[in-house]
Length: 473
Image 1: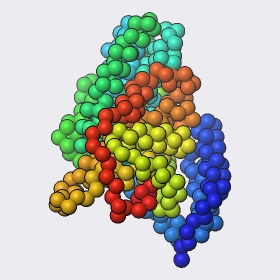
Image 2: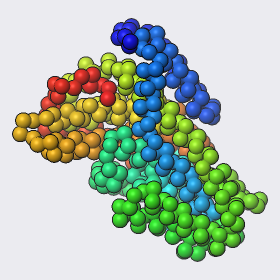
Image 3: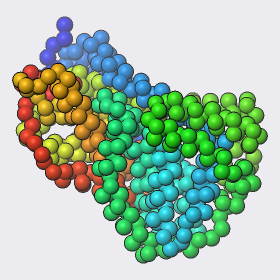
Image 4: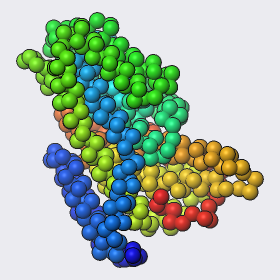
């Protein structure tokens, strides 16, 4: 029989400290993050066993948490396939080629932000956007001797614009899954909440562009791409199909399957890529089969490489499930129970997102833990009233979950890339070969949490007296 956990925090603090050191070490030294996550998970299981929890109960908590991520895992695997197929079809090379052809030296930083934003919305991945158009833009910037930190800040800010609100974004699917909300409703809410941060960012990067003009020179990227691929407009069709089907609100997985089919047809017919080679790319990831200056840029995707990301997601959500089921975070009850309006709730979510981004070291952990901690308090926004019908109460709960999803997107999703040792920050910075100096220039990411923190209050929160242990699900 499960006993009450010990009240002494020493073992928990020690496990948190060791886990934090392991995760930061892994992030800074390039060790696969799943290894320290597994060690940290084992540490917390040992702590809970010491506190009197049964092993079977702890494992059930972990399985319950991991099961929340299964819809996201399916999307992640499809993203791996679609990225490789888009590479082979010439879709991603065309986005880089046409995108870099649009830019002007006088407004280079503005174009860096806008182009990376557009590519990240199409690809749904910040790392993919940074690794393609981002690297191309950085090569141009370095060739002109322009300061790299402002350029990197504009690129990374744009990359996470799509990571936040693309219909193909794994983080958007994860947020929708843990908050039990509709992806397309979340996307609409995100567009509205980001209008002012986006507009201010446009003005900021326009001013920076004038302060740091770039002298454009020919690069091997734009010169080599037409030699490797047929870059006719038809190669953009797979990306266009995803956008069109998203506008029509077709289920995302179906839209991705349609795009994969179109990409295979274009790669086979237009790029003369054999079907067996396409199968290899879909499984292991795309890579150029001939020697080229673009070998280190045009690569990625694949089912098996994306499986590593799914492992991280599964471990992270299992971790969160154990935190939730064991009431490990119940010490937050005293503070969170004093929240009285939506503004205080938004401020608390911003603070919790910062903590989970600092200590979780991955965007996934920040998203899941923030959702686990804050969801009960969002449900308090509309405690059952005597005059409410069951349908009205269900609608209120849905609206509260949508509010939680939006707040997570405006905090945890964009705070993670602002933490230098967080994987969401470290990988893009490594790809662009810059340090943490890009952070002050990633204005879009800085503004979203600020606007959330000062979001106006509207109505008081009423406590649901029937809910216990509100820091857990």
